[in-house]
Length: 159
Image (cartoon, rainbow, N blue to C red; front, top):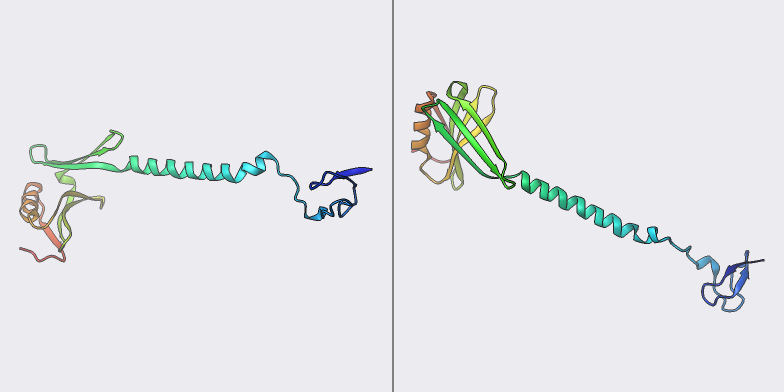
């Protein structure tokens, strides 16, 4: 007969009662009790999202190279690049002089100028970069070694 217990005063009440006869607690205002899983679900979700974000950030950081060097080797007639990553990995690439389609000096006023080679597939790779002057002589030397004409582009005045 008594299926409810008043959450305020503990008095038993019949199943269809709307108010407690002792303290007048309104049973319609009573929220159903949440399980432990329901109480902690928002916290667990937030921890999971933060963990995924942190793992993605660490993965991105490790995937970024910390050093990249190039060597234009006239004796081997090729250009070699070596990238070093934070986790110690090395990545190498080389292009034979015969596979170079163009060599370009990109001049930038107030920024970093660079010397790039473009291979026959259309991929461009940086051989050298510097802020300010000094790349023109190196670019001319690389063009002579590779045997391709040097193209100069950019917004900085050419020497």
